[in-house]
Length: 190
Image 1 (tube, helix red, strand yellow):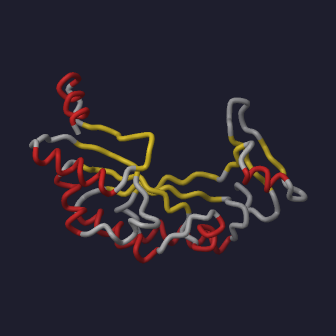
Image 2: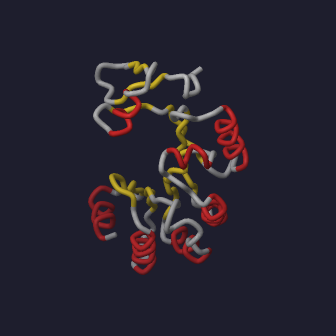
């Protein structure tokens, strides 16, 4: 909080993006409370996860504290509207609890920015339909950032996918560190 205040004094900035790492509930609440105690009218955005320990544990009071303490947007990754795909990604989410957290944030004016990935290996058409239904459910209250799955060379997942018979990787740009994955187990991009 002090760094934000000093930067605000020096530059006149009133909005801050806390980038580079996923912040904890403790950090978010501590920052919001400090800004409230100092009576600083600064706005901030951060990245948090609502998947495991935090899912459903964000109380109404927590959300109100964050909103009063300047939090405007929280980026978090649901990854897919399909439990099947999330499990494949090793990103299981207790969706009812996740939705409780989303509802609490929306109710106090904090915008959840939710990342979703399509085209993950093994994603079926029904999985994609579940993701679209999830987005429609939150339409107008949540901002979604949707990206197409890409494999990153040298990762365990890339190596696993490379071993599949018929797997094809398509690089779109020589500077791109990730590449499109094409296989019969994955929905096509178009």
